[in-house]
Length: 499
Image (cartoon, rainbow, N blue to C red; front, side, top):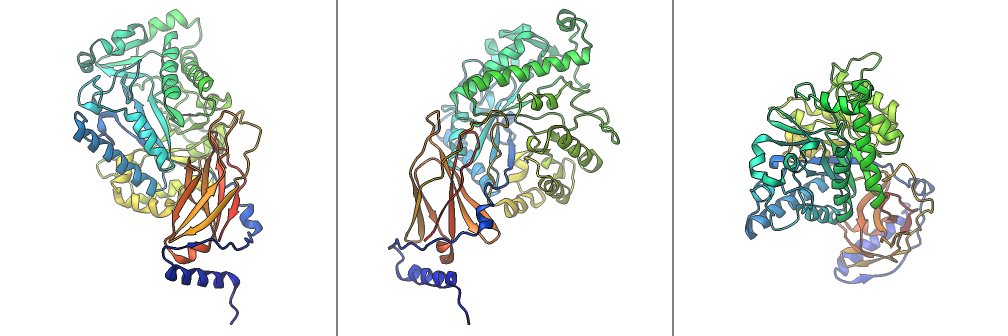
């Protein structure tokens, strides 16, 4: 019987595993890496995101933090959820940072939302955004600050917010629709105000992205009479066109202001799920371009947005034709559909899990930029077995697409200079640290080379060493690859190492 050299090596490692459980093995074998493995890098990139809703504590926090015990409990609950999301292969947290004229961090512009400390404007004793960023990065996940743009607060919130309520601080920017206050996109100061808020977040926190939501005029169910603003600033432009120009001006202002302080940051938004009617299918009156005056196609074309997460919470003919329409309009690299995971809940749409998994398979087959689930609680609640399914499918996460599709640095990243050694039942990786042109330390991604191709084991490692616990003795002898990864989402050529 012919025994291959890899089999002999695995046998030797297995015996040493049993004989020397706490010893160190430093013997090196020469690596023979197939050309197919070398050409497998860079791997396909994808957003696997979730919207993490803080409004009303829908996803988090479950209870206010008003003392040391409740604060620790609130933080532990976030860590537990982030652990579970990591296990399911989620690599991007869209963390709701601006809620309704209130925020999830220590801001000099807007007050804390009541949900964190149980009282409006009250500090919970820590900075939730800073804590969430730290915990996401510790798990190799990105965190994008989800900013709800135009909705502000209800009339009932005005008393608790007091002098810090936006309609009191800037009445000229707000419009009252029955019991709801909204920012008026037609007011020139609206764009500058939202840009200042996003710059505060981007400059003070290591968030990986700014994600704009409700960056649109309200739907027909909400009365919005902007005749006074239009008569003052419209200058004869048709109303719908003028409104689209107003929204686009806000997006442009935010993008330019944020990139002036953080050129590496990812910019995204969640437009209405259908861009407009297609040649064969009607949007049934609910679309981005005509109904709510958004033009996200223009935002991508002009470089103001890196990726769109359209809210495609539909199925069948309301989903697939419009999915291909988005792809044709903005390109596969710029579209990561938002999927209505909540719709499979029996109290919501009661759709089948198959309807959701079919959508994710089509997204992958079309090589789109990924997807985002709305929302976290329904995933972690394992609604109709969805968590079990996606954990099995995406247990090993993916690397994100480049942060900017426009104006990436030209100089390629260096290949890591790495070593590997066995320490007991684990592998110890080490490499020489390198830095980008701005002085930021490059992160490291570690892959295991499996027969089917590279498997991402750990991403965004900030240190210069990493210890990997090995579950099976034969994995001790696998080939591993290390790459540098920068803040723009660029990845270097791999360095292959192995015992």
